[in-house]
Image 1: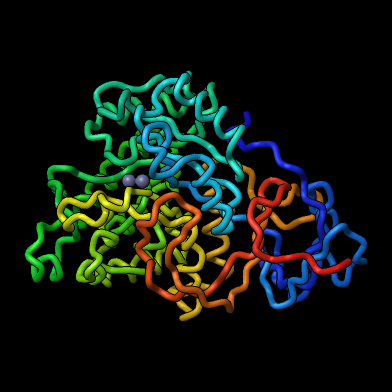
Image 2: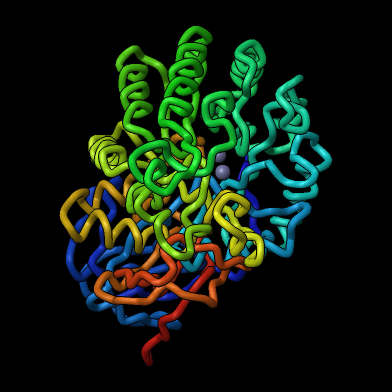
Length: 442
Ligand SMILES: [Zn+2]
Ligand SMILES: [Zn+2]
């Protein structure tokens, strides 16, 4: 069953000429290849193809990657369209090289009935410039008391289930949810937080929180829930996805569960990979506030190592738009979350690939086939015969992160940083979804 939805768009007909093509899944890392796209399909890959297309894009010095897949986006619709929507959110995704995204269901109302889900599916069919899937809630209203209509939601096209924004507090409810999810063949994506330990605190519990005199949200608030939930998943033999892993202790739990045979996939955000709790000292600390919080340098190092070795097999942005005036409140009152679609690959490229911490091929894998495989979505591949889902980057470009953004919101944790890597072209499901680059004369 189709679980990604997009507006109809004219199929691309163009020649991308002379790009370095990096697609670990297809075994490609070759300098200067031409890729011919005909009626939205990759028709031919090779050196010096004839320039007979309607349009030729001179990609000399640029890098062509398979389309990126984001398993964790908040589109804020229904209910908060002044923060984001399907059109603006998918434009932001396309600007960041994404060719598929999954949206979280913690909207107003919550996506916990087939009617709300069908409304989103129809909207995506009119407005989404990149294929978009919708997760449905695990529990009714995300209140943790009784299960949502999981089977009916799966039949209505849900891509997975999540109560993201909140944990599933009661273990017995989560156990039942795993049983129902297994019937549907869909994965649960879990926001892991023991609320009695996090206690509404706003930043990582450690040296910086002590110095700033702010209440701390300890790493164990995440890792004890990861441990509990992976134990339940193991007992039920059910697949599970751990959202936005932030703590070294959680990485250890995931590694152990996988060794025990649990079908666990796990995601990490660009901000947890690139920033630490030191960021909260900045004047604009509201843009460093998210749940889970930015953690210590030791946690960041553990996340990078786990990303490199594949323990963390997905990067997800947790793109979380908020109104400007809300984020400008004092730290304690600012809402959690940052936007991330437009800066995800540039941030990770700048902070991890350029310094030599993680190879480019591993990043590409964790941002494309990794999340696609976790959620059973089509795996973007630069291969003849595939519908084109790809993105073209200038890795040498420097750009200052600042408004305006394609997103309707501006709460970006990387604002003010100069990042490398600019996306010049995104083709999603065969259609041009974003382009900065002009064609050269044929
Ligand atoms: Zn979350
Ligand atoms: Zn989230």
